[in-house]
Length: 357
Length: 121
Image (cartoon, each protein chain N blue to C red):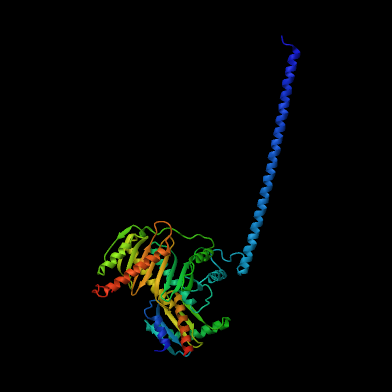
């Protein structure tokens, strides 16, 4: 028989243990809640400090931006929401004129009229080049290619770059002229980016008509066979997709390797030929030596004058970017080949159409 | 060949954007003309003097200073007029679809070349 006093003692021990455990648990809970509250307060304080710092930085940024705009004579808020104000054009052209090598710069619309002040006598002619650039853009758009920039060089080493602007400057062209050397394309990119107001450009690929055709055809009216063999050997190498050779608006030879269809090649050549003639006439200077059209999708169209004839190259990379140096080497090699063919054909009988002779 | 005629020829010949170029003075005397459309040029000669007079008065009244150049854009075609020496004007008449800017640039080029050539001689 268990003693009642023993039972009472055991019950008391159990009860005191339970009480002690409960008290300990509550203390632990209180400590944990206290720590959590402290952590929450710290996080809140840090968040508040960060938000305050962010607001300060935004305010400072707005202040700097406003002071930059005031320095340049620009309003703090855009005057026109969707297009650039005349004063913004002037500020933009100020940036372009400040770049190295640039002799003259102007922003013109598609009709060839300047939107900015013409600081030189030849500025009106430079602005007028925007009109043939627009014609070239429309002609190439018809065959599925978007134009980002047109650059050309004359035989008196004058370089003109025409950059089609986007965003709030849509429809305008930034034209720059430099002597001896081409202006830095990256610097002009930066100016064009400012003009666009951060609106992204269209970098879509050319239409399917620019790839997939392989045609190697001898000229109908003859010509030095070795020369055309050399030309065809280059096709497919160095991302060269197509060649067009002709004179005064007539194509005498064209070939492609996984390149554009014949109709596209011919249309491209004729558009480039017409552009070269129009731009040279407007500048009233030396004849055109070459024209480079940088496509919105990666690729370059190169037109080169070869005496009375001209040669157009279509360079489309499989991936990566097209190297201007590569196009330069390729163009130089073909030019040398054509010169050699001319020398070789001096003693030979003339071809039916007189090409290369 | 006089300089003005040679310059007019340089701009007009083989240029599909231009149908006529003329250099005319305030008395209506034509110093040079080159055109593929003589009727249009005859009309231009008749209109050039009153037009120049109107433009001179307008620029003066509006405080724009002396006339340098202007382009008149029609729905079909455009023409440009530029001052040479305060008396003579160059008029370049464009064919339909010609860019107004290119006509103005050609006009200014002829005027500036004339001033250079005649200033040097």
